[in-house]
Image (cartoon, rainbow, N blue to C red; front, side, top):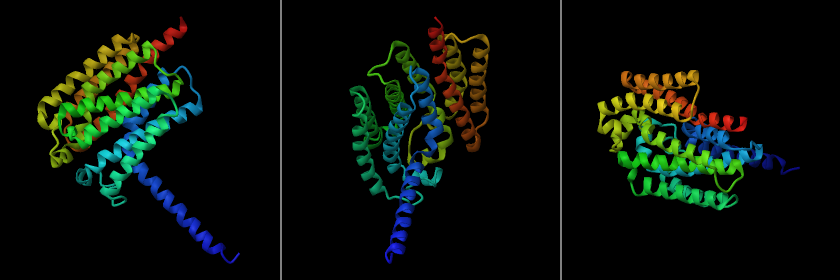
Length: 297
C-alpha cells in the first residue's frame, strides 16, 4: 500500500507518454487521411468481393503503416519547408528531432515488411516496392524533379491501392476489372496529382523544389483547366455511367478546373485541393458501376 501513490504516478506518466507518442504518429499522417487514406480505402472497398470487419481493419492498418513510413522519411528531409507550410508537424513543433525521425523511418521499414509478410507474397512485394520508391524519392532526391515526383507519387498511390485491396479481398491477386481500375487510377493520379502543389508554392520555392506550378505557373493552371474536365469525360464514358451521373461527375471536374484557373491565392488553392480530393474519391467509386452491373447479370 505504501508503494501505491508512486505506482499510480508512474502509471499516469507512462500513459501520458504513450498518448504523446500516439499523437506524434498521428501528426505525421494527419494531412493524408483525406487525400490518401479515404480514397484508397474507398477504392479497396469498391473492388473487394468481401467486407469483413477484421480484414478491413488489417487493410487499414497496413495502409497507415506504409503511409507512416513514407511520411516520416519525407518529412525528415523537409523540416525547414514544413516550418513555413505546416509548423504543427512533429519536427517543426519540436516533438522529435530529424536524427530520431530517420532512425524511426528505418525501424518502420522493418515493421512494414514484417506486417506485410503475414498476408501474401504479393502484399510483401508491394511493401518492398513502396520502400524502394521512398528511398528513390527522398534519399536519392528525385522529389525535386517535377516529372520524377509525379511518377513516384503514382507508384506510391498504386502500391497503396493494390496492397490494401489484396488484404481486404483476401486474395493473392486481383481480377481483370480490379486491375483495370488500378490502371485507370494510376493514370488519373499521373495526370492530376500536381493539383496538390499549388497550395505549397511558398514552401516548395524555399526548398528549391521544381514542381509543375513553379516551372510553368500559367501553363499549369491552363493544363488543370483542361485535364480535369477531359479526364472526367473519359472516365464517365469508360465506366459507362448513366446520363445523370455523367453530367454530375463531368460538371464537378469542370468546376474544379475553372476554380483552379481563376482562384490563385494560397487559401483558395487549399480549398481547391480539398475539392479535388472529393473529385478523386468520386473517381474511385466509378468501378462500382461495373461491379453492380456484373452482379445483376
